[in-house]
Structure formats: structure tokens, C-alpha cells
Length: 34
Image (cartoon, rainbow, N blue to C red; front, side, top):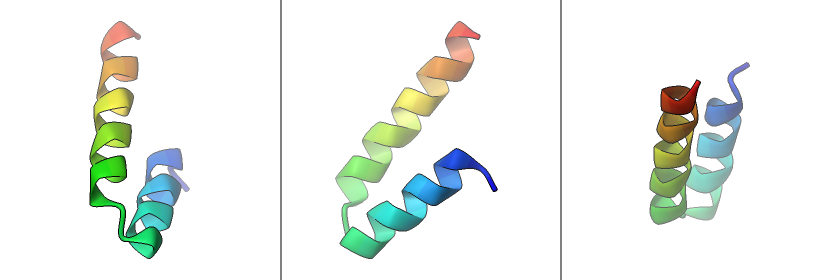
């Protein structure tokens, strides 16, 4: 299972859309830096 999927599930459970967006941006930055 993807880590991002786990985080997204937790964020959805808390109703924290903003937090999920920040996590997604951080994930994209991490992939961009390799």
C-alpha cells in the first residue's frame, strides 16, 4: 500500500482536506528532488 494512500485515508477520516493537500505537495516535491 502506498504511504500517500494511507495519509490520504487518515486525512479523509479527519476531514482534513488542507492537510491532505499539503502532504500531496510534499510528496511531489520529494519525487522531484529524487
